[in-house]
Length: 446
Image 1 (tube, helix red, strand yellow):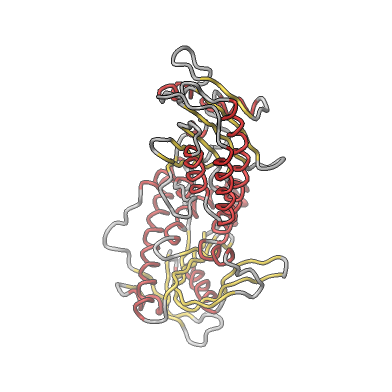
Image 2 (cartoon, one colour; image 1 turned 180 degrees about the horizontal axis):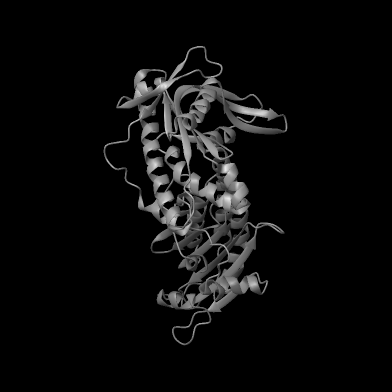
């Protein structure tokens, strides 16, 4: 390996800075910015062997996103959520913790080929023939919980020269600006899709933000509600009730947020989900069948949850689900300066009343004749009911249980056991939905 010249071309570095600016203005995501930045720095003559960058995402489900670039293999990505109250020993013994604990912006160390290591991570770097290491902390603003930590590493025998360190520190500031813009853009997307749902979040991001903006769609409708929640809240207290409610939603709601379905809103201890479809028979049939399949999966998951609760001496969670199909209006309603994205219309009112009828008939699931007619299969007629606002009586039916046992995925069983929701175990932070690994804390302290 030859020794790299210590001088760095300011002209090439200016081109890298210009590329960062243009990428930010174009709205590139964080992964493309990090990958392009590292490749261009190396191409400009900096002898980088490895770059590690960790960003605080301020995401409702995840704490950090980490990128590791290596000259030989490119970029790998990890997502992480720190369990409450935990600070693993490896983090406490890391260069990053040393920076934070001593209120430092930078720490530089030469990595010797033998002898003791100041930090455990240096042993890994030694295996990669790293000779020089420069770590840094870069907040995104005073008092901000968002920011960037990272490290630059080289395998050049001469290590980093003063010119190289000066170049890295200058480029670090450019990267911080570009990364902050990407993080804020991702934050807006994360927040809107987490709190409004995927489709509603996209609509708001695309400019559907005025009061009255909205549309009408046809959809299969699912409304679910937890039983005796008020009594449980009064008996067990606030935190126990919130924990139980989240367990209930993890079990029952997740199946309705896939395969064409989307949860439009959570309503206290219940939710409304829709499966949009066309106005013809075949699209309606596909939507209703998908909704009914999700119901069977939800029932199996709640049964699994109740089995675990019974083992722990906790009461079972009861619920009711109403199924219907019809037109749904949804859009922005409220005050001029305080809006919500909501669903409404006669079909929404009808599915809510169907859900309430599960109490009368002592059934977990009931459906309208309109819904059952599209699904086919075997149904049990429970009776005819007069729903408020509808002239004709509505035939209420119950689906027969599926012949085969519904498989409950291991991910959900694990979430029941360890208390982490299914959503918290699956990293879905990237727009392109590339695979992101859930990793231990040491991946973020390098």
